[in-house]
Image (cartoon, rainbow, N blue to C red; front, side, top):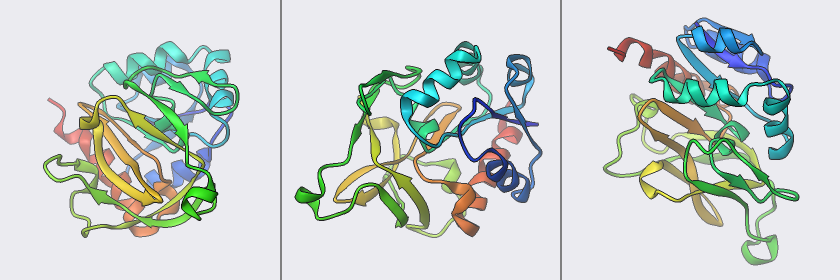
Length: 210
């Protein structure tokens, strides 16, 4: 069973339906014990970084999420769920993050610099980083499209975390990962066939665990 973390933010039902459409069982939960016992964990997120972080904190889920990421079980962050894995976000007045990955979250450059509207909203292409295989992209065509909605993006302190990028005035991380922990800046549950394939590949990681 894949546990989708409910901390009061995110398209939980959409994420659940996407995972189920990919052929895997998923439940929505805000219980630390369920997260600890799940075969895999998904951390979604929609909205402001600080609100998401405080939602986890107020429900006593910071520790359980950190333990899940360190457990070796497949772990997937989605959208703000990716950003929360880092140490700090400059959004609003700023907020600490989970600190699972080193780095920070910053805002896209002003539209006067790039002539592109912020937020970055709509379909855009993923570009796998050469030499860094990403199991989430296995079986997909080169440079698949995914659906994005965000004004901030991650700046990892370790560039080896970046498994795929996307261009929006600048190149930014679209997929990051290390060991059992992966995260996507886009919404796979809204990314049609490519997104379902990514969720299927994530669930299939369960079969590779020793």
